[in-house]
Image 1 (cartoon, rainbow, N blue to C red):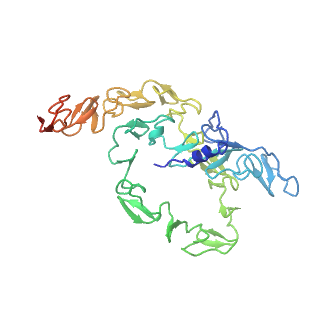
Image 2 (image 1 turned 120 degrees about the horizontal axis):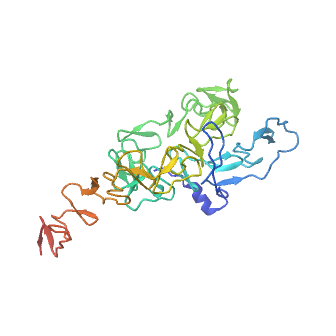
Length: 397
């Protein structure tokens, strides 16, 4: 499972690496570009002016002159909060602060790391809500077994038919120029990239492989559409090392070096969330259903409630379900909440009618499924210890 841990490691070595953690967050509508961040590390600039001489006259509101260009220090990752104050690799400049940017694979910020709350056992459903050892995180709830079609690999449930790190089985990674298809590592690249030697490259925009492998552009040229050009084509802006459509480019949204958050899109030069979602703590969420941001960014639900229509409720909209750990579950079938909240079934069993039933010929004895034909502590039945060998349910001393 993909978890962004390098900011945490750097922060441990240098507590000021990510800056002071933001204490609060505020939501914005999906059509707005800004909202206060929460649960993410920040660094704030102190410089407020440019070089002061020889630069352009910056007339656009919110811009100042830095290194001979007019920049928006609220959004520019090279001049965040002031001139010559760059953000780190996994940060964006948000309201003049360098803020942790979580990718789509792990869209949720928990402190200074990015996780997937739907699948991360250490942060299952909500930040800091850890599953007990041996349990898996499935759709934001702790479970004793992985769902049908997935395989337990370490702490995670994975699809070995498509998982790049567990292709065909656990701990069987594919190579850099391979993709996992049907449980087999096949030559190729994901995301529309092409194989060139031992790397996956974009033949449409890669200056070293423009249009074909090992077909470099001349110094100063740009690769656009698989062709080497001396000038950026119409409708694009020359940004460092690239020609960008600033109306739709997430890394150059509205101007060069203005990055959107990983869950946002660039629409008309503005970073926005998809329809019906709100930016909370650097991630786009649905405040109608998100138990961490119910109704707005600063309203988490308690663990005995869930979020429905933007409000925290103690009852679920579907009949027969109850709220456990902020999730609506059916205690008749939930392996993590069988018969009631926080009543997990043991490994090797399933929840049927609110009761844990052992699979196969095993019998539930206490909190474990055992084979009473061979188990020396439960020979022939539960709590019937055998001092010798248990064979076919009979004790042979």
